[in-house]
Structures are given as structure tokens and as C-alpha cells.
Image 1: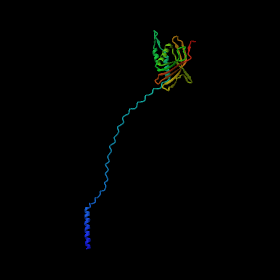
Image 2: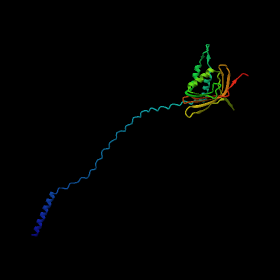
Image 3: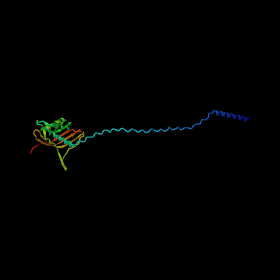
Image 4: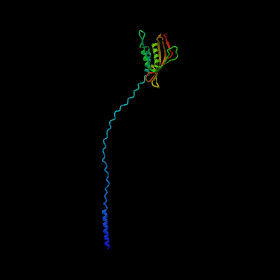
Length: 230
């Protein structure tokens, strides 16, 4: 009897196990994780050659500075124009031919606001005459051309060692621009009214501005003496 009971229990247990297996869903086989396929390497587009740079217009060259004036030439030019003030002629009617042109030629050297210190033309005057402006300087130059003849101003020369008769002109750059020059002279002239001749040592001082015009003039003639025949 006991054996029969054991057999019946075993059968029931087997039936319950089969029913449980029927209700339990089969285990799903897990697929191994797939390694993502890297995207295909894209070929970079060919590098574009940059266009050649546009030709640059070179900056305008700086204006070349004019060469500095030659002090010797400045002195020579002033002396030539001064001595030419009496080199005009008179017509049969007594008219002055070419005098105004010579005066204008001399005045080309001066700036409009020139200041000039010149010797007196009055026997009773003591000290130099101060002229301001080219108009007053022109009146003085015009008077020289009318009252003096045989103008013969010469630069003094110096001899030393192997140098014979060298003209010396002293020059210096001016702090406000331009150049200043000075040189020694021997002045000689005759009075037109009576042809009496005079001479004297002196000096000329000229200041040229950056435009090449004379801003200041000082003409000094001292120890004037009359030249008389022996």
C-alpha cells in the first residue's frame, strides 16, 4: 500500500513539473553585442590653391629733397646782381634803358617780409638804416641804381700756404630752416652826380629761408674813404 502511494505521488510530481515547464517561456538566446561599423572614411576634397595676391601698388616714393644751396654760389649771385645795378645805359633823350629790369632782378632774391639793415645815405645820419618789407628794400635798391655808378663790390680773398686768393664764405644752417651766410667785401662806387669815388671794407650777412629767399640782410661798410688821384 505504501509503495502504491509513493508511485502515485511521483506521478503527480512529474505531471506538475511538465505543466510548469509548459507554462515557462523558453529562454531567449542573447546575441552578442555587435560592434558598430565605423563609417567609411570620407576622402577630403582636394585643397584649393589660393588665388595669387593682387599686385600692390608701391607707395609713392618720398619726394627727394632738393640739394642744399651752395654758400659760395649764393654769395656770388648776390654780388653779381648788386654790381649790375649800375650796368644800364642812357638813351639820346636821357632815358634810363634797362635800369628797372636790373632792380627787379635784384629784388627776386628777397622774401616779401625781408628785414634789411643797410648803410645810411645821408651824410648827417649816424648808424644804419633798418628797412622792413620788400617794398622799402626796393626803394633803397632803386635809389642805389639812380645815385651810384661803377659799382665794384668784391669779395676779399685770403692766401695761406699753398692756397692763393681763396674766397671765404661762412655758412650755418638756421634752426628755423634755411641757411645763413656771411663774407667780407671791399666796396667801391662812384656818385653819379659828381663821379667822386669812395671805397671801404665791409661785410655782408644774408639769411635764406627754406624757399631760398632772403629773409634778413645786413650790409655793413665802414671806414668809408674817398679815392683821390695822387
